[in-house]
Amino acid sequence: MSATPGDRQRDADRTRAEILDVAMAEFARSGYAGARVDEIADLTSTTKRMIYYYFGGKEQLYIAALEKAYAEVRAVEKTVDIDHLDPVEAIRTLAQLTFDHHDAHRDFIALVAIENVHRAEHIRKSEVLANLGAPVLDLISRILDAGHATGDFTTEADAIDVHMMISSFCFFRVANQHTFGALFGRDMTAPEHRDRLRTMVGEMIVAYLKGAGK
Image 1: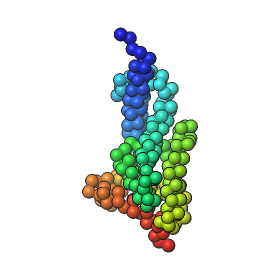
Image 2 (image 1 turned 180 degrees about the vertical axis):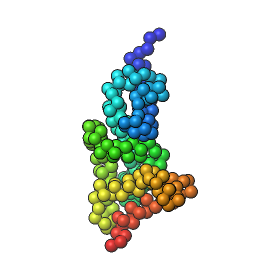
Image 3 (image 1 turned 45 degrees about the vertical axis):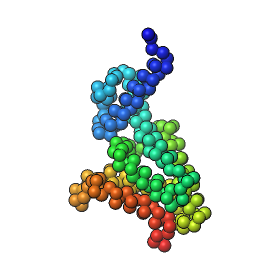
Image 4 (image 1 turned 90 degrees about the horizontal axis):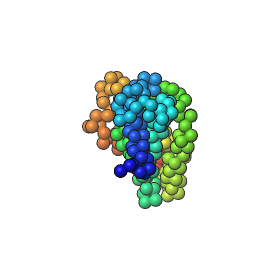
């Protein structure tokens, strides 16, 4: 019995997804310059030729990996149900979900760090990534507007600043774990610190928005 077009499409989708998963790990481990398409092919059930067929080339594969990595964190942010949470709990939840995602997806942190080394030259070539930041900024703006309306938030802050505060804490903990540990003798990613730091990022952003330090 021959495969149907639907079966072939599902096989293609599975192959493409497998290639992307392996590519994300390899780019995170070796960087853009160090990763080899041959090695990615060896680690998947496909060939270098098929990788080029699906993605077009190494740079396009790398950009697709970045798109997938950012799409995953955006999907997590969309789970914050601001229609059924008060503003304080909504922003706290967003901060803690970001913490959880960055903690569980170390390859995302590595990919972002690598792309910063390249001064975001590959991200700038992606039409997908050009608009991928809009949903989280809209989400934060809605939370801030609700918080000001209820009087819970008194600090005037824009969505980009708030997003930066949350991201910087969550990103630094993972990206700088080795240098920080060598300098200060503490592994910020160790299990015994996780709950305290997760609470810290949520309370830090809430305190700021409530006017701490005014």
